[in-house]
Length: 115
Image (cartoon, rainbow, N blue to C red; front, side):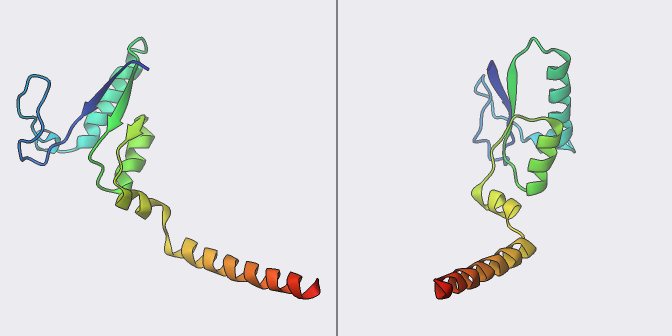
């Protein structure tokens, strides 16, 4: 693909800098709704298909951020393991899986007893 550009968010500690060495401001401080920025960037790149790029969403803090980013068409999201785990786990899934595994073990024991 073409060049990669990201909209970085900073936690306000001045640690991140832009390409000119200036402190990068926290994205949320400039925009009340940071996903408006992603939506706008995606619209711009869709309007100019000759510009080949990928949009990276960084500093994801919630599973809902991943969902919103994907719905807007972002290509990549950097997701901490804790958030990723929370997205794939659900109490009812865990309950259903436990019941399935218990049934599977019973079926294996029954098959062994018949053999």
